[in-house]
Amino acid sequence: MTGKGIPMASSRVTVGLAAAAAALAGMALQVRANARRAEREHPPAGRFIHAGGIRLHYLEAGIGGPPVVLLHGNAVQAEDYVASGVFGLAAERHRVLAFDRPGYGYSERPRDRPWTAEAQAAVLAEALARLGIRRAIVVGHSWGTLTAL
Image (cartoon, rainbow, N blue to C red; front, side, top):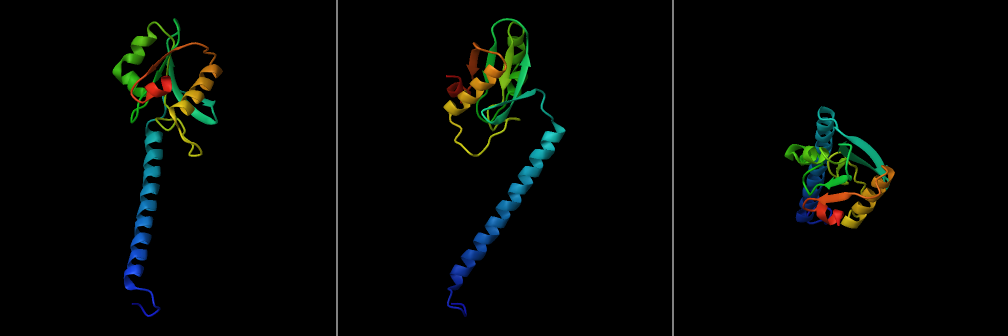
């Protein structure tokens, strides 16, 4: 026991929790600084559109044929369609748009709502309407397939 009637183990736990909280806060600040530096060094290659109260990043190419919308899976972004060659091949015959889904790439992800597949689909549908696209071929990869459906 300490002199004030508080068990020593309890005060050690409190100190340990405070140290852990400080370490986590420090790591969060470092992650934020690293993300800002990465975004300065690698600016977005595409365009932005506001839909569903957020700013969405997308890539666009091609001019003819029915529009094709590409939706990526988890842990990737729209640029992966460019790197794989799918974006360029589709753009030879179609207007192609590859979106960074909310919370990925350069698209925002506010923390005020759950980002279910249905919520993401609603935001993307609004973005497509704003871009004048009424009908499109929608291609989803991995988790993006749920949003595409």
